Image (cartoon, rainbow, N blue to C red; front, side):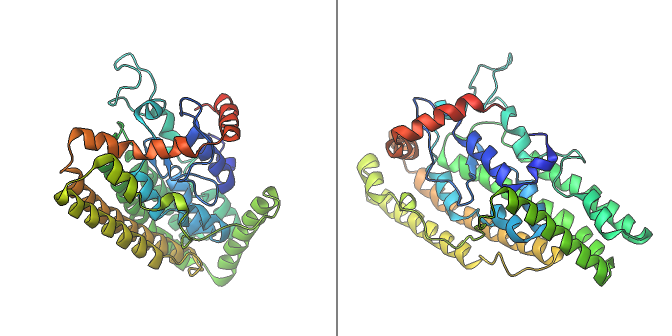
Length: 361
C-alpha cells in the first residue's frame, strides 16, 4: 500500500480494491460483486466511495490513454450501488478498527483501515509524478518554478480528497449518497486546485518538451501493458448495464408493500435514476482529450456531471425514503445484501476465503 511505484499501476490498484471490497464479508459471501467495474476494481469499498481517487485523477490527466480507464469507469452503477448497497451492518463493521474509546463496529469509529485508499497528502505518495516529469522535460528556471508550484498544489488537492474520507458508517441509502456527494465535491475541489497550475506549467513548455512528456506517458503505458500481458484496456463509461443493475421494482413492491403515495414517490425516484444514467452516458467522452490541460478539464466536467446526477437521485430518494416506516426502511436496506448473497456461487465463496486470509490493511 505504501509502494508508490506499484500504486501508480491502475491494475494493481484495482486488485487491492477488489480484495478490500470483499474482505469484510461474513458467512462465506464473496466473489465478483454486481457493482464491480469493468477494469476489475470497485467503486464502493465498505463505506468508502472511490478508492484511490487522487491517483485516478492524476494518472488520467498526466498520462491519458489506458491510465484513464479507472477514472472513466465510475458512473451510474456506483449511484445504483449507493442506493442498494451490498453491505449489511456486520459487513461494514469489518472496515472499522476496534478502539478503546469505542466498541468494535461502532458507527462512530473512524475507518482507519481505508485511510490510505481515501487519499494521502504526503509529497512522496500523491499521484502526480513530479520527479519523472522533471527528468523528462528538463525544465528551465521559470518552468521549474511552475512545476514546483504544481507539486505544491497537488499535495493540497490530495488533502482535499483525503478530508472526504468517511468518519462513520452510513447505514442508510440517503446517507450513502450523501457520502458519495461529499467525496465528489472534494474531487472537484482537487481538480480546481490543480488545473490552473497544470495549465500554466504546460503552457511554458516548448513543442519538444511536450513531445517528451507525451513519450514519457507512452512509455509508462507500455510498461503496464507488458505487465498485463498486453491485454487491451477497457476505457469506457458508456457500457450496457448488467442485469444486476436492473431497477428492482418487483422486489421493492414485495418487500415494502408501498401505499399509493409512496408508489408515486418511488416512480419519481426511478425516473430520477434513469435521468441520472442518461446524463452520465451523454457526458462520456474518455478519448477526446489529448493534452494534460484538456484531460484535467475533461475530468472536472465529468465529475461535475456525476455530482449533478448524485444530487438528482439523492433528492428523489430522500422524498421517497422519508415516507417509509422503520420496517419498510429495513426492508429497503436489505435488498442489496440479499441480492449479493443469492448471486454467490460456491466456487466464488472459496476464492473469497483465500482472499480474506491473504488480505490485510
